[in-house]
Image 1 (cartoon, each protein chain N blue to C red):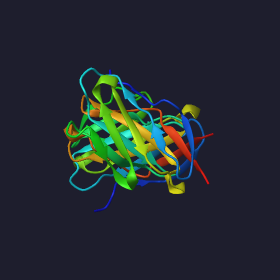
Image 2: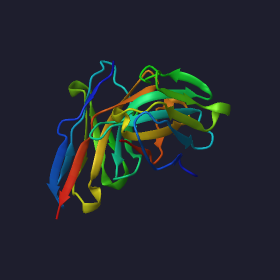
Image 3: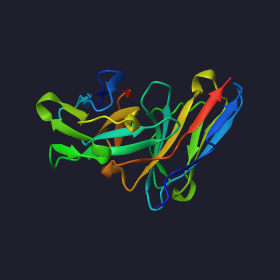
Length: 114
Length: 111
């Protein structure tokens, strides 16, 4: 079974530029999560999708971050414009169903904003 | 809101020694509990999970954890550390269809 795929693995941009991350979850997984992991901290949930609908985006900075999950499969997370404090690892995870809680993580995208 | 506390941001043990990583959760209703491991430049990998069945849970790589409701704890242990166990470990608790993670504990294993 293929795992959660993410790309790119690494990205370096200047502040005020835009960037997009892509995630393809495990086949058949209805729930998809985007997390932000700042160095030395645990993952923080940014947004949660159930199929192609948003379940929770309470911690997503909506003035600069956006995410979509068209057709309920893969997803894109965008930052526009980026700030220095957005430097982090962005993790995508998926689960068969939200109430099962067992999440499978992708390798992450390490973003550096200079 | 659920919170997860991991005591000790860094734990160092000798190879062959006992590993003990501590985790406490905050909710009054016992949640599902998880331990994940993260190796450098990789995503999180599930070690084990507690889902209200047996209170002693066995996971991969020789790790186990014990759920103690009276102490709101879910500490992770391994009897004998290997060099390959060096990584960051995260405890997580369920609530409102999402997981709340602790800040992580970096485990180093000395030869």
